Image (tube, rainbow over all chains, first blue to last red; front, side):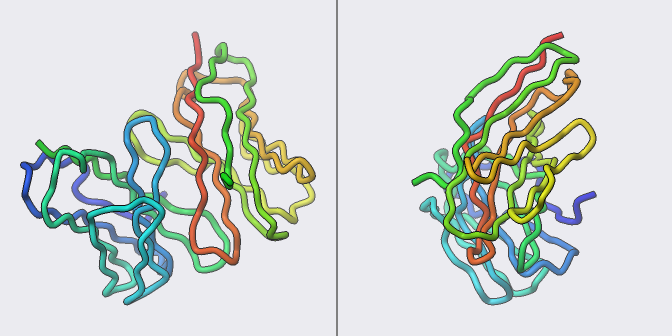
Length: 112
Length: 114
């Protein structure tokens, strides 16, 4: 049902590596979001975007960065992964006014 | 102040029984949307039901219904005839039209007992 995709689904990576989590949607949504979530815990907004070339930091401080060069694509990058980055990362999108958030399947990141 | 409050960290329900998951919200905007999502152990967020602030009737979607009490600012989710597959985390969320983000509660973990 969802037209929003995240890759990879699972990732195990060593400390200090640079990683990019991919998120793409085919619904033409202006707004996109990245959430960080530890297992069984609440979602924390780390980045969001209103549209192309627009990005903002969310409520939770994060060492990650994002870009929005195309409407459909909203990748999240960690320049130097650390064990504290181990978590699930959820990407979502929504229409500009109203409507629900559509979520990708999530990326479970483990930094060893 | 928290925008969305879910006061039940964990709930248990017998299979085939009904269960109510509580959610209260805080907003001064007259126009807003309320949502419930289910998150099974696999991690994906599954949309369940939506209620608009101007909707006159409570939303229903199959076994899910939303008990919307606007004056009390509550939007409780009712699951009827619980099934084992309903065991999951449930998140209440709100969106204000003037804002750019969704506000999520801390979630309620529901366990359905056979």
